[in-house]
Image (cartoon, rainbow, N blue to C red; front, side, top):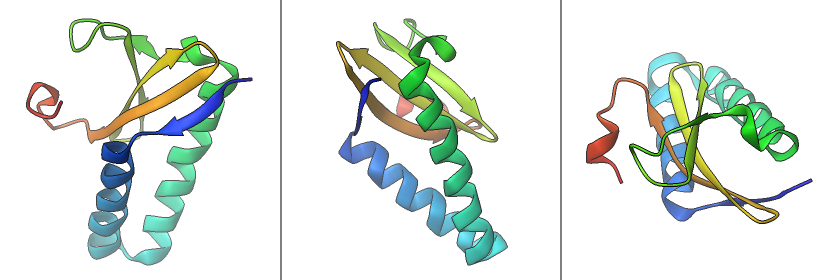
Length: 96
């Protein structure tokens, strides 16, 4: 099993997702959304190839669609790095 590392920008993304979701749909829904995101991220620890390669974005990166968000990650040995978590409507090229 891989070791999970969440990069600071991804942590910031998750906080922003929680805040926006909480404002629009309430704290309970925001908490549940993050639980759902985390559950899918945990699956990557066992199956890192689950996501789609996205070398056109960054070499070695993969992405996993979770509801309306894209989890960008890369594998380095036994380490799985969550790099960004972006809304699927965002232009990912503008959010390195």
